[in-house]
Image (cartoon, rainbow, N blue to C red; front, side, top):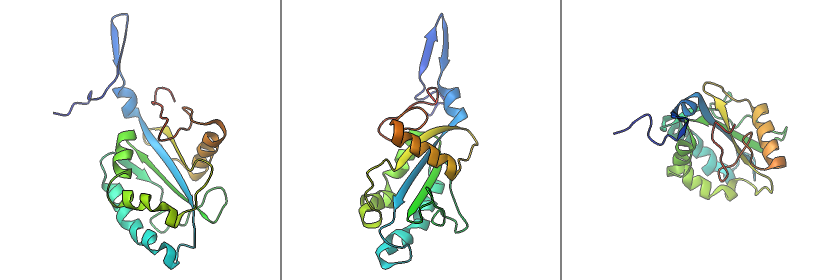
Length: 173
């Protein structure tokens, strides 16, 4: 049976104990990832990618722990850019926690396209994904995502901006 305290971390001092549950419900996990296109979006080289955008986004929207995703006028984020670079696509979303994000990332069509990312996007030497905790209800902007990703590139993982491999709790942020 599920409990709101399942997976909670407890801290006890002087006979008083507190749970991480309150922190986990007041913060949500924002993520941004970018990719430099190998060709224009409307070319045959990217057809598999563009044909799968709508189904992958629908799966994300219905996923357990999904909160929000960046959308432009097209209903996805393909018309938005980051770092003032017309070849860089930006994808940004907010999730309940790390586990919810990872469960989506590594399943189904998203996982299949992730495995094929070199067909659609160039390999970049700098970090392309950044995560950070936001107050529940906050919807990050592309400018905010650019700041977080730049910070991660310049300083490595910190509570301000971290990676999938090196995570921080909301309390550390």
